[in-house]
Length: 457
Image (cartoon, rainbow, N blue to C red; front, top):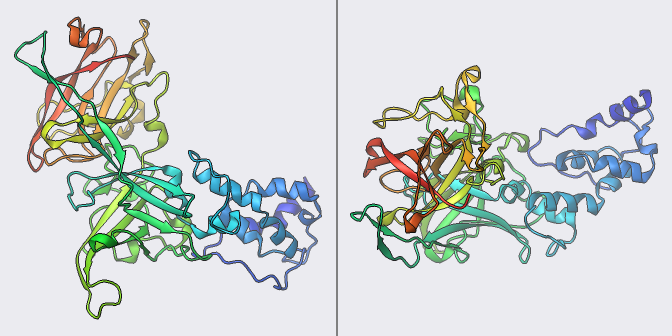
């Protein structure tokens, strides 16, 4: 134990994250040795190379960079390329990256896009505004790594209604049902995020905004910036936050600023303080082109993006309805919804009449001891039980993004109305629900009695 204590004491400097915003490597001829900073022998450097390598696999990237400052030996170990290959692959878990092209090594590839790898790791992002600037609709974006060009790009996910047909409903002939065959696609020709790999340290500043190569064909320029998340104790009901509390999130940030988030308080002072669950894009129209004697800069706007923890949109055997779905909103077109299955919470307030009555979420309950829940999963007959919530990730001029669109308080026996026997929906479970309705501009909102039909699960 004494030997281990001396090993970790000798490497304490290396294992602590640097407060600097731009970690840099010392020159190869720096006067470092394999001894302790305090003059004591380092037992760590006496370990076999394979043991040192095994220990280094537990270090995060910034700690590995700091380790290069201790000695030439540890610098050589920390530059082992297989260590950096793991960092790249961990940040693109849904892609198979076989080589570091177009970079010269795995480490160069990782550092060329540092500190923006969290964008691809979280994959799905949604914004408070559409790219057109609408504050009601928002956008759903896929962030991915392009191995051909060595860049990170963000592509909007679009959906259209597809071919539709209309049928009379046998159970109520006065109602016309139209079919829904959505077509989901990526807008690959017009990325809204594009971060090119470059020189080491190019993207390392936490405060600076990074100019991106997007929108040139339309005269639109944009920059991406890191965010400083608000701690829970600094959040209040009077703040406009993204994402709103209807959507589960690890971190939240402000979406209102008099100076369009140009103040330093909205940005992290170091990489360690940067949120890995939010980011912002500043965009504007620019006329005149590169090299023109006069360029006009107009219409500046800021979009704020957040991500949903993967466990809230991943379906399981007990929560088969959970996920990101496409909804047909008639004249408004298609919208993306986040469906969450949770325990039925009898102690929570459910909206019954007006928009002024809040719809509280089960994970926002101020008193955890007051929660009385039914289990989430399968009932005795194999059907799902629990609460099912549908929250808009993208919205429309009536009910915007971030709002509930409907809630079924109990999709189990407690909320079951009937099993449909009409041909169109034969076998479907029909349960009670509340649907969110509002006039244009999100005025006069209310929750109306509605029904949810569920098939196949």
